[in-house]
Image (cartoon, rainbow, N blue to C red; front, top):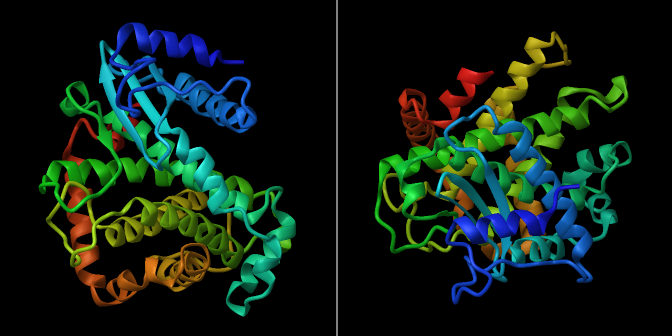
Length: 341
C-alpha cells in the first residue's frame, strides 16, 4: 500500500505544498481516522499507483505525486516544482461528487428514454450512479495527468486549474492543451468502457450497449463540467482560457468513439453496427440531458442544449483546429504518448 503521508512529506519538503498555507488549494488534507478515510484512500491508491506505473517512461516529469488539498469546492489542478510533478484534487471533489450521484438505481427504470440503461444494470458490477461518480473522478485525474505529461512551461510558475470563469483571457495554446488533456482522459476512459463492455454476455455485447456505456460516461463528465463552468455569457470559440463546455463535451464524444472504434478494429472485435460520431450525439446527448435535469435541475443545461444543434459545423471545425494544434506540438500528451507506445 502506498503511504499517503510519506508522499505528502516529500511535497511539503520540496515544493510549495504546505501543512498550514492560508490558501486551501496548497494546504494538505490528511484523511486518516476520519469517517471518510476509506473513500479517500481507495481513490488515492488508484491515482498514485497509476502515476507510479504509467508516467515512469516520461523522463522529464517523474516523479509525480498526487495529494488532496483542503478546499471544500469541486476542482483540481496540476503544477510542477523542483522536478516533481504535482496533481491536487480538492477534498470537496471526493465528497460532493459522491453526494451528487447518490440516487436510487430504480430511477432508470421509470423513464422510457433511459430503458437502454435499465437493460444493462444487472450486467454491471457497479451501480450506474456509482459509475457516473467514478467517471467524474477518473476524468479529472486523467485530465490532470495529461497536463503533467505536457510539461508546459506554465507548470513551473503557476498551477493549471479547471475552473472556467468570465474574467480570463483567450490563449490558443491553453485551448489546445485542454483538448489534449481531455484527449488523454477520453482514451483512458475508453479503456474502462471497453473493459466493462467486454464482460457483458456475448448476446448483449452490441453497439447499443457500448453506446449506452459511453453515454453514462458522457453524462457523468458533463454534470461534472457543468458544476465547474462559471461562465454565463454567450457561446464562444476563441475566448477565455478554456474551451466552451459544449466544445469539450462534443470533443469527448468524438474522442471516445474514435478510440473505441480503433480498439475494436485493432482486436478484430466485430459488433452488429459500426460506431460513428452521429451516434454519439443521437444517444449520449439525450441521456446527458435527462440525467443532468434530474441531478442539477433543468436550468443547468437548458442554455446550452440548442448550441449542440445550432453550432454543429462550427464546433466540429474549431475542435479539429485544436486537434491539429495538438498533433503538431511535440510536447503534447498525444505526441509524447505516441513515442512511448
